[in-house]
Length: 294
Image (cartoon, rainbow, N blue to C red):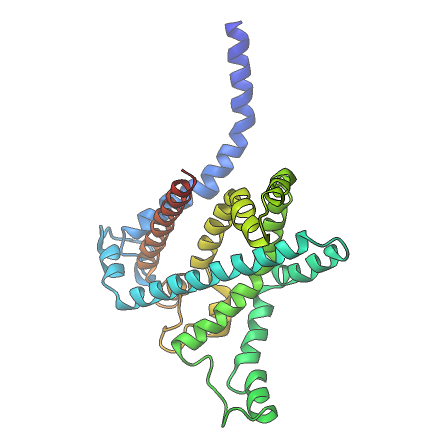
C-alpha cells in the first residue's frame, strides 16, 4: 500500500514537472531577475557590470516629481474609467436581460468594441480629437459653436480625458457580458417574492439584483482596476505622453525610462512599486466587500 502511494506520488510529480519547469522559467525567474535589476544600477552603459545599488532606484522613484504626476494620472484614469465601464455595462446588461427578441444582436453590437484592436481604436480617436481632426471640423466648420480649433490632445487633462473616453467605450461590452451572465444566475424566486411584497423596479434592483451579483461586481472591480493601472496603448498612441510627460501613466513612464533613457534599474523598481500598490488596493477592495456582506 505504501509502495503504491509512492508510485502515485512519483507519477503525479512527473506529470506536474513540465508545467512547473515552464512556470519557473517564464514566471518565477523573470520576477526574481527583475527584482535583482531593481537593486542594481543597470543602464545602457552598465549592461555587463550591473553594480549593486541597494535601494537607490526606489529612492529615485519616490523622489521623482514626474513619478508622482504619472501616478496621479493613473489613479484618476482608474477612478473614472472603472466606474464608467461598470455602471454603463451593468445598465445595458439589465436591459438585455429583460428582452427576448434581438438580444443576441444587441449583445454582439455592444461587444464589438471589445474585440476592436486597441491600436486601431486609438488611432481613430486621435484622428477625431486631433487639432485638425474630425471633431474640431464639425464644431467649427459645421456647427460654428467654436471660433477655431481646440487643442484637445495638447493639454494634460483634455488629453487624458480622450484616453478615458476610449477606455470606457472599449470596456462596456466586457462588463455587459460578465454582468449579464451573473444576472441570469439570480434566482427568479427572489423577484417573485419581491413582487408579492410590492417592491418596485428600483427596490428589486437594490435589494435583489445587486446582492445577487456582489461576487461578480468584486471580480469586475479588481480586474478593471488592474487594467486601469496597466493602461498603455491608448496613451502611447493618442498623446505619446505629451506635453512634457503630463499625460503619461505608470506603464508609459516605465517604458520611457527603460527604452528611451536606458534606466532599467529605475524601471524595474517602478514595476515593483506598481505591483505593490495594486496588491494593497486589491486587499482593500476585498475587505470593503466583505465588510458590506457582514
